[in-house]
Length: 199
Image: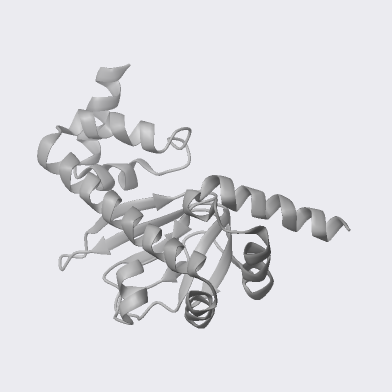
């Protein structure tokens, strides 16, 4: 009974925090949870490496993940952060079965709910709800990409930092300053000046 209650609570969290799951019947979410698995990943370990074809989608049950590119010079460029109750995925590479262009790394010890490609394909063939969910996921990825592009083209560094604080509330003490400055496209010294100015 306790396990069933824990599962119900988890399904409620998924529905609430991943809004394109909200209209999927609970019976279908149970089907998903029963066939997925949870793994633990240590801080600094990579869930996905650039150049490899991703075979899994991760729902972050606890912890914090970072997506980043590695430039030819070896410099890391942060693309996105994935806190609790969000998805960590190289979606275009996952659906096209192509190598990922970026890494997904754990910034904290994390627990991930894993959906492998076989289960994903099975869900799409199982019910139209999952096809709608997949479309919504693709839309979300596109919207995030367009938002990031607009921030770099239209906003200054301070505005991008303010937007970062809105997008990732209460995360400032969980993420290294070097990762935040990389996400904003500025040097760590510039980030320090922005933070000092805002104080």
